[in-house]
Image 1 (cartoon, rainbow, N blue to C red):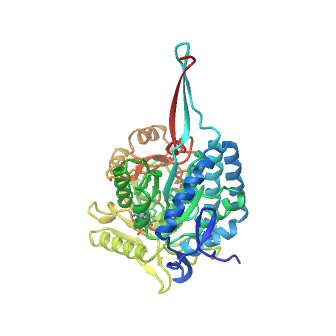
Image 2 (cartoon, rainbow, N blue to C red):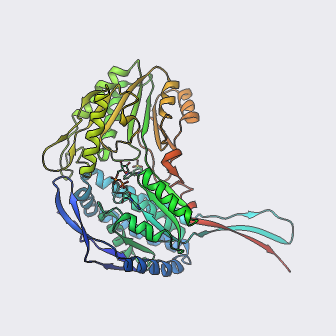
Image 3 (cartoon, helix red, strand yellow):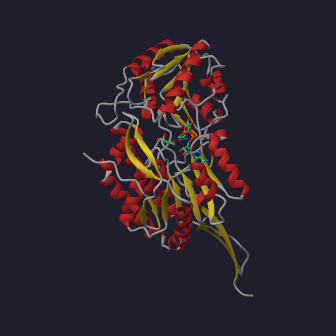
Length: 477
Ligand SMILES: NC(=O)c1ccc[n+]([C@@H]2O[C@H](COP(=O)([O-])OP(=O)(O)OC[C@H]3O[C@@H](n4cnc5c(N)ncnc54)[C@H](O)[C@@H]3O)[C@@H](O)[C@H]2O)c1
Ligand SMILES: O=S(=O)(O)c1ccc(CO)cc1
């Protein structure tokens, strides 16, 4: 059986502890599994100095050599999949099979961006004789990155992959609740021969760290994934200091189910995907707008499948859904469910926690939810689905666009005309039809409206980590 790693900061290529620590809990049983060192100001200063040095080396390292180190680190993570997955399940609670998939997904981000590192092409711009205009894409500098607790390995991977592929150095503050995924990444890069200082990993009080790092001249770009409230706060701080940001924020994903699909199959797909990572995914399908012609059959299939979800400690191979991440989520979900029922929603499954040990909240299905229920506006960030009936595609799209969020959106239909209508009108950064998968390494991912700005992954994923420099070269004075 693998063990949970000893938690450390990683600064200037070395592992370090501090006297002040934060306990890390296993949400399946509330036991303390680790003590996370809190970075002191001196650790942050050391990380800044190391990143400055690391940038000098890494930005002048050939893209092919950068890619080789990234691919070596990724290969090590694939070899260590069982150990990393065990750590993720221990600290977050997600089923071990999903934790293994998360590690693979994180590796795919490194592998994709390692390829993109070698394709940051500039242009030669047509000009009059005697002068040449060209552009090159250069690393933006040192990046301050902040990753959330819901994907402890693949979310840090996404940010580190983009920054390192572009030739930047990084100071990553990973989530205090789930630090081990990022720690395993740092370990893999260390073993793969990444020069010291290129990647630095710190933990602590989030506002103290962002408040200290972002204003520093040396930090040239801020990448954040997390709630819209925190993202807006960090965007404000960055803008006060004139710095660009990449913000991947909250979502409240609509799923438009047209009446030309099999309602049973659609309901089962919806319920299965809803409980992935206990619904704690910014792309989680949440508001199902189902055509009235197939509504009852969809609801039956969805609620039956949701209620049958094997909910237990994620370390068991048979578990389909583990606990939610912490007690805050249980409280928030309970309040949202009670509020919806009070306002007239029908509760068909779940709605409450189970057990006295651990943070288990049952898959929850709310049907015919009125507009004034809080859950119609607030991201539940848990295993909670809303299913409402609509009379037309037009009504579904209007409902889908009614919130300030615009991250992932989904449709189920076999009609090309319906797809075209959704593509043209649904306000979202990512629209998926007949699949509830929102993003893969090779496609750009990100939001519109309150869900953030900028794209990670795909061909454009490195653009935020580079700046375009234009050369105007006259052949003679
Ligand atoms: N988009 C996502 O993937 C994602 C991930 C995790 C949480 N969330 C959102 O956050 C909500 C609640 O989660 P929470 O209770 O952990 O919320 P939170 O808003 O307190 O924290 C969210 C994340 O932001 C970080 N953070 C908070 N304040 C920060 C600051 N000043 N500087 C830098 N980082 C900071 C935290 O460490 C955490 O990882 C969820 O309901 C969900 O909407 C979104
Ligand atoms: O697994 S994904 O749906 O691609 C995904 C997207 C974004 C995030 C950030 O919360 C996590 C997983």
